[in-house]
Amino acid sequence: MSEIAKLLVGDNTYEFPLIQGTENETAIDIKALRGISEGVVTIDPGFKNTGSCQSAITFLDGEKGILRYRGYSIEELAEKADFLEVAYLLIFGDLPTEEQLSKFHNDILENTIVDDDIKKIIDAFPKNAHPMGVLSSLTSALTAFNPSSVNIDSEEDMYNAIVKIMGKFPVLVAWTMRKLKGLPLNYGSKKLGYVENVMKMMFEKPNEDYEINPIVKNALDKLLILHADHEQNCSTSTVRIVGSSHAGLFPSISAGISALWGPLHGGANQAVLEMLEAIKADGGDTKKYMGKAKDKEDPFRLMGFGHRVYKNFDPRAKIIKVAADEVLTDLGVQDPVLDIAKGLEQEALKDDYFVKRKLYPNVDFYSGIIYRAMGIPVEMFTVMFALGRLPGWIAQWREMRLRKEPIGRPRQIYTGANHRPFVNINER
Ligand code: CMC
Image 1 (spheres, rainbow, N blue to C red):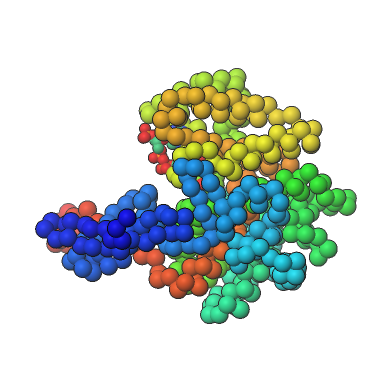
Image 2 (cartoon, rainbow, N blue to C red):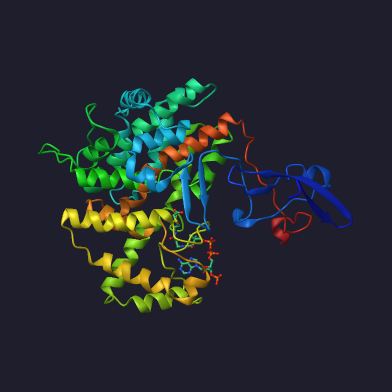
């Protein structure tokens, strides 16, 4: 293939270099366009065709249904690794040795205490506040209690901010849920692993010793790994763009949480379960809801279906579907919405509307069923997604800072009024 792309604008031809990724994807590097073309820019709402950066973290091929972190397949990582190992891999680029992992874990454990005044902020929220709003606010508030993490000038500052957020974030996640459930706010233990501490903090009752259920631990590890990164999605792009102003790690993550909250993104896991419950309450008529999803006059969408990049099975959904069956069986939970979900999937996979548009179940379709079987309330599902995505956000933010990427600042094509004179209020 030629190494250049040519663009004809009016009578002028401009040439641009092509960039090739390690998996042979090709991009036209238009960095010079505006400078050489007297102001011509490209426009691509939703960034459907626009690469925002070069990244060595996650590779995904939506046509083939491939997802890899730092070159390792998601299937292998979900099977063989634990969440903290995957976090290290994403953030620092390679699987850790035992020594590296142990240091990382110890540094995190040294940072698991959250300033007690954070509890006052939690208390100020109404009890029915959505946990994603609470989590985003608390994450931003962490900056006030850790001012040293604001100006990040060296790799050491960066590392310190990373172990701080890795340590404190699960505490905020757990406290968000405990507030929702009216439980006293607690802490983990230095004797426990990362995911075990998450479980202890979330599920421990004040009047009994908490014992780790290995089925729940394995399932949670797997779910967190599957959510850990997904290249330049809406929340990750948000983290990178906020971070590009050098706002600091915690506010960048806080912005990512807000982006994740929406039902078209991470909020879909809550929306899926609510949808499945609504179908159940309506007599379980999946055909009726398939009809609604296809009706362009009806705003209803089949939540947990479709993806901007996957035009094939989302490999995460395949793993989660099997895990949902296993976990529910192991825990002895019978959840009728699992059957409704499977029924919907079967119908969608043979329905022309879904087949033509290549709409397959995504990561959010089955995850909520597992979270619920673990005893996690539905409003917390997207918070669990955020907990899993944390290392990915950190890795992307770190990469953006290390590569000294410029501040994110898109252009626009203005379509408003041309210049007009001001009219005094009494003359309007
Ligand atoms: N149900 C019914 N129709 C759908 C759905 C759906 N879930 N998803 C897409 N379509 C249709 C859409 O109406 C459009 O039809 P047409 O070509 O006739 O106008 C076509 O498929 C393409 O959809 P799109 O909205 O242009 O695609 P997109 O890439 O902009 O959006 C999406 C991707 C994930 C936002 C969308 O598929 C969706 O809204 N899905 C439901 C929400 C969901 O499950 N989100 C979680 C995504 S995965 C995890 C994550 O990112 O956090």
